[in-house]
Image: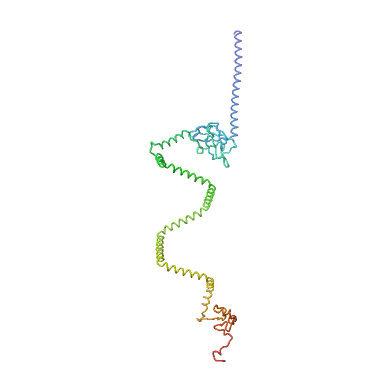
Amino acid sequence: MTAATKTTTATAATTATKWTRFGGFRTATAVAVVALIAAGFAGVHFLGSATSVRITAEFTRTDGVFAGNAVTILGVPTGRVESVIEAGPVVRVELSLPRETRVPADAHAWVVSPSVVSDRAVELGPGYVEGPSLEDGAVIPVERTHSPLTWDQLTDSINDLVVALGPETSGGGTELVSLAAHAVDGNGERFRDAVQQISGATALVAGESENLTELVTALSGLVGTLSANRDVVGSVTESLTSTARQFAAQRAGISESLTALTDVLGQVSALISAHGDTLTHDIAELGALTGAIAEKREQLAEIVDVSPTGFENVANLVTDEGRARIRLNVSTNLAQFPATKELCDELPIPLCQGPGLVNPIEFPPNLEGTDLRWLFEGGR
């Protein structure tokens, strides 16, 4: 081997060694960079998981919803859409919210458009007040999610309605439109007047809103009272039902009674027609008698008061031997009689004020302690 060849071989070996060392360095550097990137992603994911709550909502359609769209609660942006993945008949939308955010466990999810030109957002509601909340990894099922109609669905629905009402078919819609047109034809002024009257009535009702509010409040109170006393109301209803059933069962008897009452009233009417003058006179006399009795009501009251004692005395009049006991006190005080009172006022004679000669006279006389045998035996 020549010197030139040896020199070339040595140079090539040195160059290969340098390239090998440099390639190994680059490989190690690339591996380190990849490891750092992976660690960064893992750290970000870990930190994100530690500071956020992941919730999955299942929708039937998610047109216009993409990763990065906003998640709102009561219209306030709170989180973001992380991913949108089709899973058979549903679309699974993963949402992330700050960990301190509380969402009711029975919350609903809507796909909404905050404005005409903005992207669609996912709205969660209602707002949290109290009770259990959605945890990390919770799922809102399709039964509690709501997607808006697409433009194609809306136009298809309108097209179906127009076809159903079209003139080429003789369905109920066509007949309804024809009848409505026939009813309105020639009655424009009447419809205008009716609309104006309805407008006036609406204004009147609006002006009486306070009274209507009081009426509704009173009705609400009445309904509440009935609800609180439903047992009593039920008892009254049952009683009325039972009474109605009894009337229904006695319908024949009630009909006969009404027929008999009608006959009696007819006879009374005939009697009044035949003897009207006499009845009028008798009623007038009865009225006079009633007036006289009313004037003597104090005396009648006294009679009613002393009558029991008088009847008791009559019962005591008869002795055990069956004989009657009679005792009279005759007074000769003339001032107590109306016929002689005026005479006594003019001539105050002894019989008017004094006991008189025989005042009072007892009959039979009290003969106790008096020996009157001489009167009947002719002397002592």
